Image (tube, rainbow, N blue to C red; front, side, top):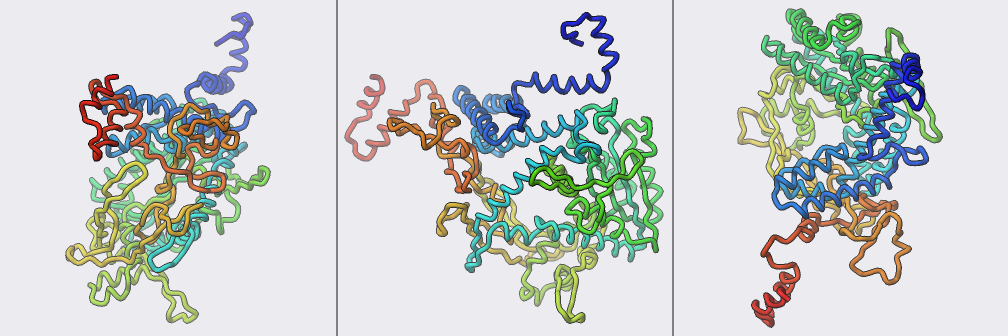
Length: 623
């Protein structure tokens, strides 16, 4: 311990008096102060680091990657150099199919801006967890700073979607925001689909005589900060805890499959108030398999630190759903709703340290944060998948069936028609006409809840070349469905050809070419994220575009400080696109003995004119 200028004996006395918790917090602060390679969490005014500072850091990182490519010639060395640049800034290196795609990402300010923002937000939130500021008695689930920042980011994304217009080949025009409300991005639709699927599992289980079991699995204590009061906390993040739970379930699933047990149902990832996730799982299986499952789940859920205090009581909990005491879907409905939008839940309750608490609404200025919003922002920040089916058929087949044209099924197999009818919802004032979508009927058509990948109806796909922002790659796009016993007959779904027009573009211009699908891809996969300027010696962050001097060299292009590395400017007008590979090749160091750039220019200029002989060009390059 540093004695801070006082005698060592006194320093030791102070350490004994204020040691433990306070010293751990002091180490967190010291680590932040010593970290001069990554973005600071706040600026000099104590305000959380904003987009301008992130853009400046993104510019510097992209420039450094340019320099790596300039001084290194081999692919392996370039990748190693870029990986080192990424590691120093706390971000993972680019993932690409080709070296060109790898470099294009590394030298793109937009790519760096997104990665640096995610790294900053996660580090800020992790620090809040370490210091005990993310907890029941402070900010439950997620800190107020990150919740407000994430809400602002979501609002900006929504504004951009509203300004992007999609037009199909029939002249139908929608904003991307409108199209998004027609899918599972709409919370009401997402909640309804989840409950439909859970109800379908329950109806199938009832026919088969299977029983429902509701499990809750929690991480060991070393993953929990508990408001900074847990001496055994090992500084794990919520992402680390989620990876632990995924690993535990992988062991459980493998052990059950080896015994011939294939449960089906749903799992929900939900945070404790300190941000550490735990899992709720609603699983259906045969009555004679219940005892085996209990042994297997307890074995692997308690495999790590199973002898710690409270582990046997708190780490694994089981509720058996008994007939006549409510439905399984009704039991899990509150967990689904409270983790989406809170509809119909009433008070948002949480169980912590043996007691039940109510999470109330917080207001910070004009921002209102409900408990469900906090949970949503928590999942977005840590990239945690909240809802996942266990067993059962693929939902992608269900969605593809709903896109089929009924007229194309007149001569289809009965199984295809039955599965198609299961996906159709008919609303009418006539009770005899009303029909609800029936997920249980779909499960039976697919081969039952334990069919695995060997389903009766499968997804048909076609390989297409997709030009992405950084590289062109071959991907599989769904086009319909087919019967496993009749693979040569494909029932194609109805899809539309969409032209996306971005903000500031004319109606005739293509925002990103034509896209095929019932709903277009998210705009951030299509919009160019870099400004039009290449590397210049001008300081782009202290000199505004309006203040350019009259004698500014024409080859020096100055971009607005706000636009640097952004998708669009403040008015949501798309920034110009940069050909990163061309810039990289233009700035790349000339190999020994290779012709100069100027010589190549002259050769290209006089190639058709034949006015200057090649020997003259060589002489010119020497002088």
